[in-house]
Image 1 (cartoon, rainbow, N blue to C red):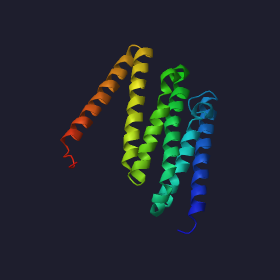
Image 2 (cartoon, rainbow, N blue to C red):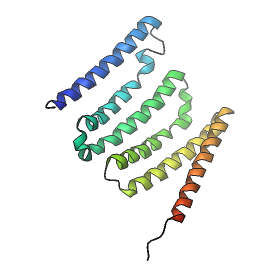
Image 3 (cartoon, rainbow, N blue to C red):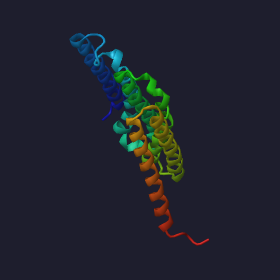
Image 4 (cartoon, one colour):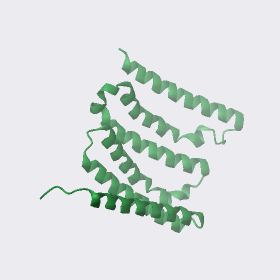
Amino acid sequence: MRNRGLLYVGIMVLLLGLLFFFTSVGSLLLGPDSPLSLGRLWPLLLGWAAVGFFLPLLIWWEQRRQLYGLTFPGVFLLVNCLAFLFTSLTGKWGAWAYLWTVEPLGVALGLLALYFFGRRAQALLVAAAVIGAASVVVFAVLVSLLERPAGGLVGAFLLLLTGALLVIGALVRARRPQPPA
């Protein structure tokens, strides 16, 4: 296809048009304060921007090794889209007392995306694991303390899961044959 740049711009404009159409219809049918209004779904604009970073990898797949750096901001924007969408739809803006931990989690997931789409540098996995585990542990502790009683269960589950994954990772590494020194 010759006009891939035009295809990119066209898809982005179509997606933005769909978002505005959907939210406009939602506002007309259910009122301006409905959950389907742009006033409540504005975080989808962050999702739209995230798609703008992922779309070039799909359109120019054969050049993905040169474009893989776009995955990091795409993932980071997508994580923020989901966090803001949750608070916008539920009205629980106070949840940012623990939701701020999605910011380092977004960094960890962005590093994982760089690893999978890029040159598979082992350091990216290590950094993603450290930042991601720290983010999940802090989230679990904060949600356990601030969102009683259900948050206590969520936090406990996340702590148990993270701890189990760390133990399994340590055991798997211990079984690998070590190269001679």
